[in-house]
Picture (cartoon, rainbow, N blue to C red):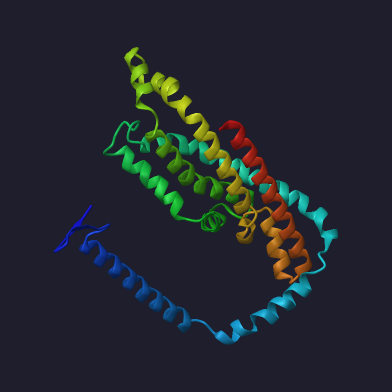
Length: 271
């Protein structure tokens, strides 16, 4: 704790003068950044459209209501495709992410010089690119359809699951690992009997949570040709069929709410 000397004796201060000046400088820099960002935004914004936005929103809402509920039966198959896309993508991503996580964790990697940086690169590369961008690239490579969506979901899931899992591996109790090693167990047995039991609750929670996220992302991948509900959404938007768009949005909302409920129940039961 810093102390200031005065004629009346020492005064205890929460921070040093240098820390106070650094805080003031940080606030000034933040204010300058805000002003600069505001100027950049104003430069590229046509405020006449912003002023007209409430009227346009009201017009769009009037076109979207009432929903065209007779369109709903045509969405069951795309909805099933969306759920399958999310589930298969999560499964494939998990299968790849598990060994990558063990290679990335400091306490389980066999090579901290070569394999660990390579595993961390895979995790960062996966997390750096959004699922929609992955789908856009894969539709160009493998063609439109569910396969592109499944691979896109899997590629995105590798980074998410791998990062959280390798952090969980690094936080395990080393005492249990040392106890199993003391019995003369092999490395595979140490992983099987000392590491995996500690990871199972975290692993299950991470996987189910990622599946819940993938349900939401799969619903829009069809916008770039990856199948699922997104294809119907894109077709309805192209035809300006706003009453159909409302039905699709309602179905996506209900699906996400159900997946959120299932995810919470499963994680609560496991953890």
